[in-house]
Length: 174
Image 1: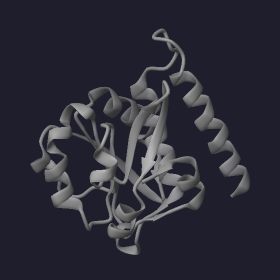
Image 2: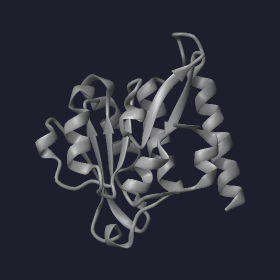
Image 3: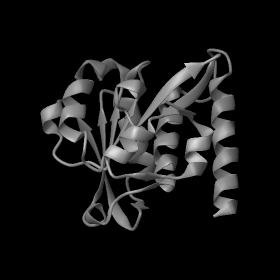
Image 4: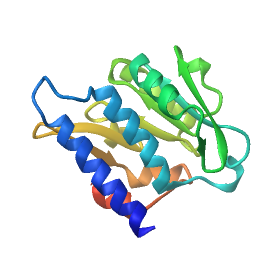
């Protein structure tokens, strides 16, 4: 576990370094978000009832993140489950998901997603300032020109998800 954690730390800081470069950065933001979303999974434990069937990652509002996740991770297993990465165009399209990534362009629908998934074992990841405090599990935000992420521990508890203290220590706890 220590070596996995060290690799994640190195990976994370490499990604942050890419993000902090000027506008000609080598990695677009959608690639960084996709890689982080996939790596967050390693540090979160879902309840037993979520460990059968497909592991569903729903992307709402960012075709580039969806394409990146589907291309790089669509054929991999997550937590022993086959992966199904879906691109949704409406909140009503969501039936069941282990992870929902809500792009900033669709943040107006955050309340509807939260209402539907507030107490379900679903990791809600957002990309808009303030949504972490409103109930997102993990929220990306820029601090001093660098990508950071907020962790809302209360939301994890509410959703019956267990987050590793290692991930909590890397994020901004709110």
